[in-house]
Amino acid sequence: MDQPANTVNYFITGYVIIFGAMLAYLVSLVVRWHHLRQDEALLTQLEAEKTNPQAGEAKPHQPV
Amino acid sequence: MKATGAVSFWQATLAVLWKDLAAEWRSRELLSAMLVFALLVIFIFNFALELQTQLRASLSAGVLWVTLTFAGTLGLNRSLAVEKDRGCLDGLLLAPVDRAAIYAGKALANWVFMLIVAAIMLPLFGLFYNASLILPGVVLVVLLGSEGYVAVGTLLASMAVQARTRDILLPILLFPVVIPVVVAAVKATGGYLQTLPLEEIRPWLNLLGVYDVIFTSVAFMVFDSILEE
Amino acid sequence: MSTTPRALVAMDVAAGLALAVATGMVFFYAPLERVMGAVQKVFYFHVAAGWVGMLGFGLAAVAGIAYLVTRRSRWDLLGVAAVEIGLVFTLINVVTGMIWARPVWNTWWTWDPRLTTATIMELVYVAYLMLRQGIEDPERRARFGAVYAIVGFLSVPLTFFSIRIFRTIHPVVLGGGDPTVTGAFAMTPRMTQTLMVSLVAFSLLFMALLWHRLRLGELGERVEQLRLKLQS
Image (tube, helix red, strand yellow):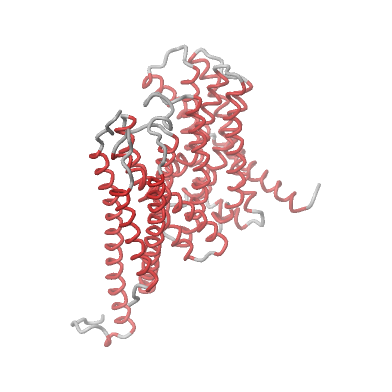
């Protein structure tokens, strides 16, 4: 066994998977963060309208 | 008689155990379901693996424990779902007893049920496959293995029945955690059936013992926090 | 609007730099192993990912105990965060293990104690997430999660030992004997250095990710409270 076995393909696959998985997790964190941020903004807005109907956003929203 | 606290713990434990046994004596629904299920599993194995009448000892140990494990899940789920549905858990919680006694009583009752199932399965299994399974060693392994199984199983089942997905949750929670018990029990049972020297069986018995001690004590420690509302 | 804390940004940068250095060392500094060739280099991040996985699950068990004692929801958020990151890295660990096993042992999968234990561990924590999903009440979800994190983590060494005894009695046929022999190699100093740097880089990455995930959990909790307040 003078020459090492040619396993470059496995090596590359391995590192693609490692970085791919980490990247996928990062993306999932970012996506979830943005979704929650949107929810938060929407809910605070709704709450503001509920407590003080006139102080709502500029859009034409009629309190029931 | 020692301190009153100790007495009331055992009294409460026995009361819960007695209640379960009496209820089961009247309805027999849990045991009959477990037994029929266990029989069916054995029959399925027979066709799936094309088992010979003279079964290899290592194989029969595996079939036996898989059967007991599956039947046990059925029993555990039922045993705690009944408490949940009839509101018995709430009633027990109102009673001024140690929560650990409730756990001890339920676990003991489940252990008794598992042992009854095993006591019927072992001779039947021997009958079907023309082998003698009732050896002192095998009985010891069944006692140890089912204790560990029931100790974790009762704890996890009492969580599973309170979840929305309770019908499917228990095996998913229980099996990955209980793998060491099943592996050790299968190997120890197989060892006794193959009449291996005790030195080869002892590591498995030790593992079973360690598992039983760890999980029984942990279950006692954390069970309080499952039942508080 | 809460902005990202300075320390967190610093930690992100540190983790990113360390990861870049470790990657560079794996690709250019670490020597090529004589028998196995390039695939042996998967080993560095494979071990580091396994380490982070254990770190995550261990931390989840600690957070579980802390939650049961203090009943502060922050510990529960930490527990989920740690489990989630542990799952990602254990998955990396298992998959890279399989990639390494293919050319070296000539099979994608062996019932090797470590590989098997890692996979069972992965299943334990998938079950943990499923348990949490099935419970709506946040307080009960936290309690049950804590209990299961403790029980699950305790079972990991037992699983490992049971499989290891299993294997010593029944030696692995594939790969011509004990798997630790086939594919074993002596670590040269450069290899050790690369492994150490990888471990440090992954630990930093773990801490940075954990912090981010914790903040995500806190945001989720805030949104949940807002929603409950609006409904009432």
